[in-house]
Length: 140
Image (cartoon, helix red, strand yellow):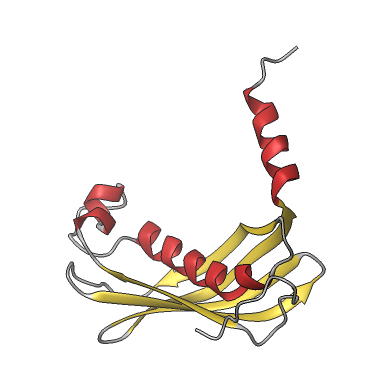
């Protein structure tokens, strides 16, 4: 991982992040409802890719900020059996204000299993949480 600790720098293109998991039944297609084959599920791969993007930038955001995933466009191109390790990599390739775009990929111990792009947006954590909690209030 090249994400550096801080909290006062700005996420800039060129940063990278990673996330790794050993595949268990909990990440399998049958358990996650994305198929019957006992392999690493696409939803689990997407979550791992998002974790790599978070790893890439969260440590350099200003106090009280976080990122939220707003778009993902990935292809899952190879199956991974339960028991194998998968690592996702995210590289920040563009920033447009609060919008961050990442090139992403996932590899198991043998080959590339997924690739694509992911977009996150920087938000004020307290404001976002307050806005979300309003949904729990009864409609007038």
